[in-house]
Amino acid sequence: MNKLRFNSPLFNKKVLAKTLLLGFVFSVYNFLCSLSLFAQDGEAGIREATNKVKGYFSSGCDLMYAIGAVVGIIGAIKVYNKWNAGEPDTSKVASAWFGSCIFLVVVATVLESFFGI
Image 1 (tube, rainbow, N blue to C red):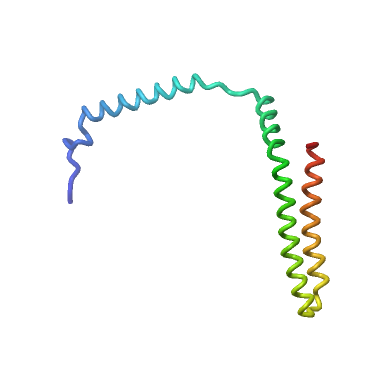
Image 2 (cartoon, rainbow, N blue to C red):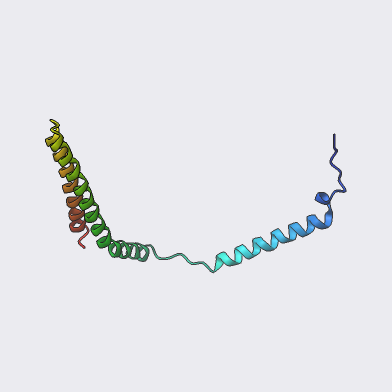
């Protein structure tokens, strides 16, 4: 069994002193850097976040409309295939797909009017 020797480099006094000095210098550096940081006013931060959300909101609504269009096309193809196959639950599937498309459009419109954009 190997015994831990106290004259190994891990217990060298010079290495330990350099490590402690380096840790102290790093701590002082972090403290001095943190003094230069200032917190932003809460109201200004909320105002900036609101402006950023408003800036991206029209793009998000356009994206929701595009997703609604794609879902509508996929739904129309699935309903058409079911209708041609003569399956009995075609009306239920058609109403589900149509409802999902209407939901996406209504959500985009309601959110747009709710946020006043």
